[in-house]
Picture 1 (cartoon, chains in turn green, brown):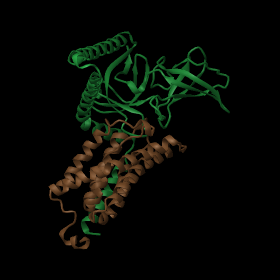
Picture 2 (cartoon, chains in turn orange, green):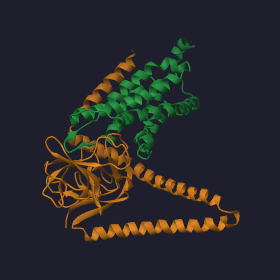
Picture 3 (cartoon, chains in turn blue, purple):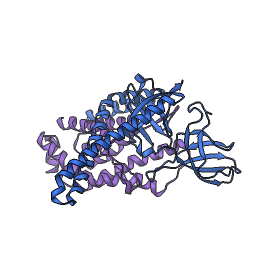
Picture 4 (spheres, one colour):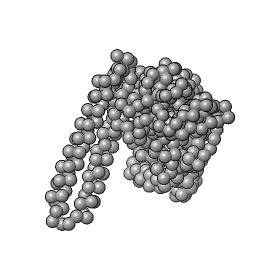
Length: 267
Length: 182
């Protein structure tokens, strides 16, 4: 081995030892700094992705138009394009109106955020949002929509944050079930097989006998999630050897997230 | 040196691109990872110190951008992926003579295996922290899927990067060692 390689190996080992000695706080700071560096690229990438998806949508319209007769093709294309644009605007207006209404009637202080990117890792269910410390966001803050709980913030940089989704195995939420005295812990699965994840509500009593459709809401125990946020609806209940376990369908379609709110406190 | 800088830039932007590459539904939503392909190409063509640097940067970015710190629990320490990348890049570096002789097919397959090995190593680390291990078909697809995709995309990526190496006048070997492979 050459002298250069030995020196490189020694420097490599020294730096590696330094990094491996990081604790949780230092790791979070390092991650926040890296996210801060990457935030312009993630924001630009998110915009590009939306534009590409828009172009793909228009290409689909053209494919459909080719099936129509030749005389109506031009007119049809114009009408469809106009309609598409108006539908997009209508969807946007409805979405924002919906969000604004929720923000106004909510009992929490909410910071509106947009999803920039979805999980880039295999083993964690996360999304990246375009709000950070500059907007008052901190770690372990709940993230919601008007339909229910999404998850909580983990890494928070200056203007970008990572949200750990409620469907992740490590996102534990203390929950109670409406119409019963049952309390338990909700968590997700380690691996997401399909697009729609299911949540698991553990540590219920064996006599719980929950019925499909009953709502599970945050119980407020634990301090991270305030009381009363809808987590999901009971899909099935089973009795295990020591406790009862329910499967929940998340209240929010986690695969179709666009706008979310970070709960920064109570009003 | 120009090729090394290009590879560093590719690793950086590849890491950004991975946020936006959709998962593959028919592979149980397995991810597509392109950064390992760049790193493993670098491992086969770069000298040892530069290979270590590339593995270091890629591993650091992977840990910093994807591993989550839940509360006060670090499931994958910053640095773990550097070790994994360096070890696997070392294997690829060992196959360098074959690559220089033009036998790329082995490297494409090994590149896929190494990509899956990164995901498997991550899974074993989080499993160790979370307390119980299980393997289901979904998990095997999550581990194997990225490897299969890497095998498929690596010939194209290798070919493009080989062309970049030629354009930038990158000598695959120092002139003193060129005779060993001719």
